[in-house]
Length: 425
Image (cartoon, rainbow, N blue to C red; front, side, top):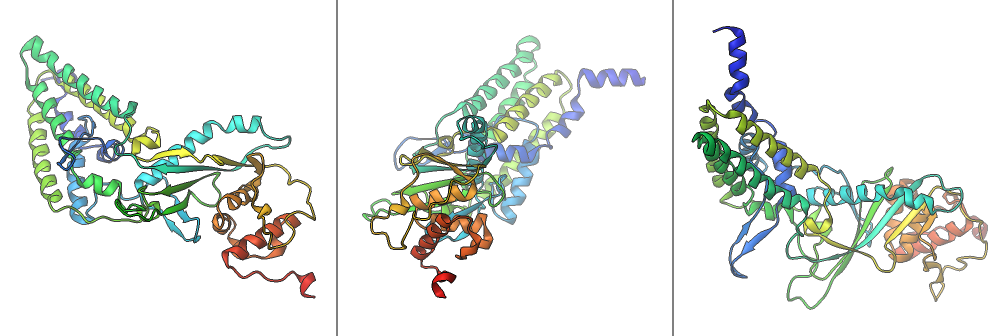
């Protein structure tokens, strides 16, 4: 057999390369399941749930089957080990900051930040004269509980891809009587849906506890700030109450693994290996399987990386009605008013009244408006964005108005506030 004929046979029916393709891209499959998991059907209210995760059969599933088995035996986790958007979560009442380890919260921050970046031009066009760039945008949301994630185009596209794959696999069967492609496609899709229906995903994706347990008469409320930290231009303040998720506990929660998960993953790894051996025996119409696998890979990549609304991740966020957003722009501070914010013990709390407009000067101005709406929250953010101002030092503030404002804010927090030098002398 000549080299030319060997090349021609390989390109006519590339069967050997299929076994190699099936073991690459496992991390993409993992992120796609993490994105789409959540929808379920339940025959009875107290009955078991059947989770429907439309991640299509693709080249990466065999590799993912073995990597997930190794992971669940090692660190006992199915979700990605770290969020793809590193961030911090800050308790707006205590000021305590912790590193966010929740993949879900990191993805919500990333998606909301991308959405805000698309509207930056509109904000600057409406800004005051002299504003050249965005310093800090803080969006404020209220969290409302949802039973199931909202259905969006990313979830529907998964089912459409699976349907088209099955239709394509029928073509060689209908034309030439070759049912092998259809069998492999159906079995691969069934194993993919089975892997995405494990209950362990639910425990890990929505870890943590509720603010108020069902049946508890005492309703709790908590506000937290989710941000990438100092140097970044976007932050979110999330106000939860009632049975909403406690995001502070979700950020670091690590649920106990379910007993049956390692056994189920072991069985599926064996089944995927059997499927891989079966694929290596195909000699005809292999281009159909290459096309089916490539179609599934495209869907996996899109599902893993697509921007989705928070409701699709079972986190229903509604803009805070009193002040949905605060925009800090790079322009000069207004003229200092020596008589404003006078006196540390204003009974009517006039110094806490928000400005009648949402655009304020710089990062400090944005944080100052947050402090007016959520007492102690601004102080907590100052410690993150300006570490040198973790305690009140009058000489670090630019204007007399700013100095008096933060003096009162730190005093309400209970932090030590030194006397002014002029007064102490």
